[in-house]
Amino acid sequence: MSHHDQRENTGWNFENTYITLPEKLFTMQKPIPVHSPQLVMFNEPLAKSLGLNPESLGSKDVAVFAGNELPDGSSPLAQAYAGHQFGHFTMLGDGRAVLLGEQITPGDERFDIQLKGSGRTPYSRGGDGRASLGPMLREYIISEAMHALRIPTTRSLAVVTTGETVLRETQLPGAILTRVAASHLRVGTFQYVANWGTEADMESLVDYTLHRHFPKVNHGENRYLALFREVVKQQASVIAKWQLVGFVHGVMNTDNMTISGETIDYGPCAFMDHYDENTVFSSIDREGRYSYGNQPGIGQWNLARFAETLLPFINSDEEKAIESAKEVLTEYAKWYHENWLNGMRAKLGLFDEGEDDQSLIEELLQLMKQFEADFTNTFRSLTFEDFEDNNLFHSSDFKYWYKKWNQRKEREEQSKSDSVELMKNHNPAVIPRNHQVEEALQAAVERNDYSVMERLLDVLSNPYAHTKEQEQYTTVPKRNRPYITYCGT
Image 1 (tube, one colour):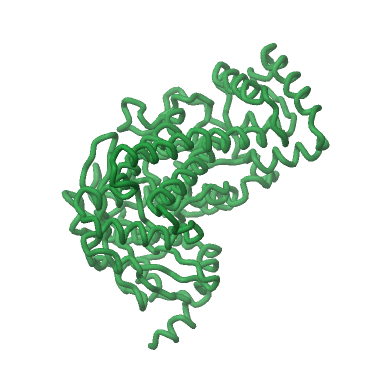
Image 2 (tube, one colour):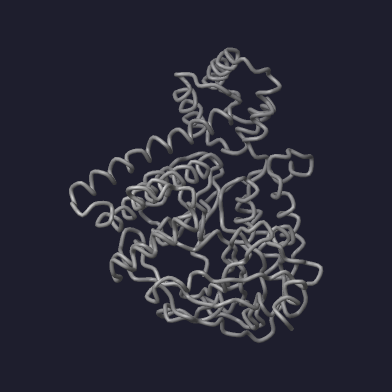
């Protein structure tokens, strides 16, 4: 079959520009074939947006999602990178993932297509290079929910079961996820080159990154500083978006921080129920390093590590280089805070800026913490003025706050209905509630029943719709013990 026929057929249109980078950055590596792959999840809207043709998907494509066959034009490889994991620097790399290449869409956009769980690579260290079904389905659910919440994220195109088991604490069904990303370049990629590469290696990595992600950035006096500034802006924006919906990433290691500003790596992630800035879900985060309230600061810490990799190129005079990088890094707090404050204003139906807005917001958050109010549902209740049975809303402190909030809204030019529309558009009706995600995974993994997951995905696909059927997904279970997640392996 010619390249043209294959394109006509399923729509794969592959290139791999990553192989133009210095060889030190990757190892050519084919996925390791699996026994009897079966397609269990397929993301049709995403497939269409990539220029694929879901109608003509056949067994050949299932074989592609399993790594048993390769699409024309792919040059599979495993990427090398390093990273600070919980603050400790270490050499890493794609230990169980293979980048097939880049799909060029009909609109001439470029997306990495990566298989996760596709077998051992030179970077696997002790691992088997495989993944189990539950964590791959979790990533599918959460990444698609994040996309629907308008948060930049890697996405999930397909999940296949492999017909093989993987051994973790017990035997689990194996699976492979097809992950779609603007790219898989990470802060850790730069750390790897800064530690083990040459000056020329770093130069080609920076050129590649600017060309691929920030083509509009002026290649003027200092590309290195320009790149740093853009990445800082992107991170300030994406982390503010996490905070505004109560998303806790769980492992903000530098190898899990993309240069494109997309959320990546859905291991022990979860969404906060009752508001508490100390919320941590991950079983391995005993110190709370990556708690909800620490995320903005960790973002800045990671960006400082990124700056270190660029210093020799920003200026040959180290002191001047540090000064320039610091100037940009200081902007992060300002950019983050602006993003967060404007987002919070929208959640409260405020269009313009008032000087007391910050304290109005903080007072509400304090009350939510005091009364253990659910983060998502509190804003939903405020949107619809639906103050049903909830301790927070019956407290005199809240009534006092509510009066202040209404006085603040009266100073706006926009109408009350405009304000409600703004709130509806910024306060999701639904998030992937931990217990609902668990139910969906359990049904799929233990009973081979994907209907629970499909219903959940459907409800999460338009979180700002506020429909009748979303209502049953808004309940929060009474928990006696905190919800704990484990690194998806």
